[in-house]
Length: 198
Ligand SMILES: [Zn+2]
Image (tube, rainbow, N blue to C red):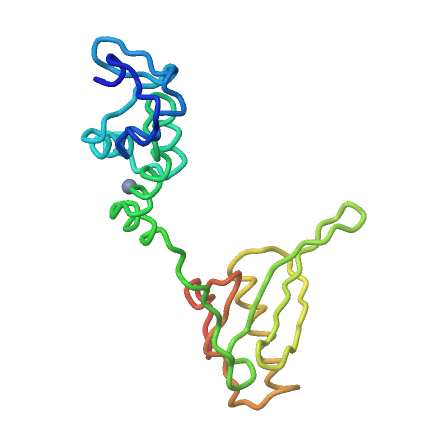
């Protein structure tokens, strides 16, 4: 403030390191009631900067938001770097982003024998205005695929069709020791809705 009242020295060597960055726009620093402005932004003294960044970052809304809020009303040399560093090292933000991490993608275990795991999906085809429901059953071990046409999509119908498919597979294709231990429909176990594996 004193230098703004008394005037800037002609030589930059006469300025302290703190004041040197302001030299380039020395004529753009009006004052009002003891506050220095750069354009319509307040020049923030060094001792208030950290406190101000804390206030601007109270909602923990990330680097861009905090920087935009700072640039709207405040100025000091190196403000962008200081704000960015503060937000990037904010413990609250780091903890929050860690808790938002997606869990690693899980995959099904590779089956060890036929019909250990069976995948089932329902589809619908339309022919001459008539809808037909079909159920596709696929054995994950052998890639055996069975397509059944269903009268409806009720649980009982699906479970009975599953049993028929399994029995047919046992008779025609697979050993009787190949009993499904896990039956899936759209990723959900059918055993939970009444299908039996025996
Ligand atoms: Zn934060």
